[in-house]
Image 1 (cartoon, protein in one colour):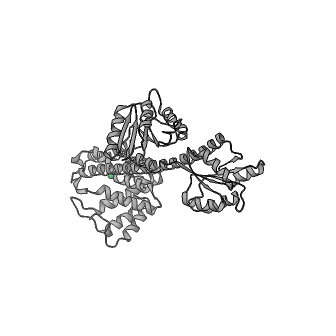
Image 2: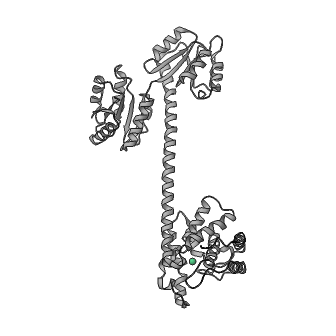
Length: 462
Ligand SMILES: [Fe+2]
């Protein structure tokens, strides 16, 4: 059974981790401070250590440093639990061989995923040492053996075979070898699929600057001078392996975050759409005879805009503007909206006010300014005889000119309480007559094209 030791001074967090992991079938041991953690590890062989970073007394980093010093516990795979933006000590944590970080408070699934991942990847990093001198390989094993799984190859040829088989995390490559020298091996490595990104550190007794410059130019990660000084060699190799690991976990993190962001963006977008549809439904409910008017106007407006060259998000915005153009009717009394006979001047003034009321309501949606603009001026006429401001020509915002045409088309082609939809020929005639007076001629002509492409009169309300 996989055994996990969780160390955390926060009892709640400790209990939760224990419950989650036991549910998944792991055996869970707990410790409430660094000291107990170290003692438990000396007593019990565990497969994974989950270690809180912030603990009173001995911190998580101090605890892990102590664990690494003791040969009996040095190898334990460790994942840190972090409750704050853990940035400044991340390098130290990685240097100590932390495999991963779990942010607190954690969700059960999230903790489980991290644990599974750590158990899978929790092995020693693999170092492939390539040297034609057997003594050098023995030395390398001695120097790196505690921290790394050291594999060896005595020639360039052997190295190329071994690399494919073991996929090392780093290669320590002797520059001067009989047969195939280090640089030739390096060039061939670059051409091997999946191996081209493995960092290579050259080992050379050369003192000249040209060799140094050449190696870096070829893409070497670093080089170490012979004879190897263990402290320096270990630090150089560690740094490279840590950088690589950090890059990979960063890549994973970016991928995870991007995915989460896309999901939440999608949810927000859905929510916005649902709210807009609910609102447009509320407008249509004021006048049951024109039910569906808002969504039809939105559909026509979007089609017109796409023929004008709008695309992507712009088209979605036009659709939304069409959907909500009459939202101001919410502020107009039902008796007036539903009145069948002629409206008095006073009543007509109230009806007209839906443009300004709508604009005021939609102004608050500052992310989509087209909504307010569309509602405000969709009853303006191209010849300046419309309302509420008597704007004319292109001084009427384009979105309002588009909604205006779409709105009038639907008004004529939908069934009203007092009449059926007008015949298509009549509708076409009215729009044609309105070019340059009621409608922007360019937009009106697009509507005429749409009508002409619809001999079955299928586009109207059904
Ligand atoms: Fe309107």
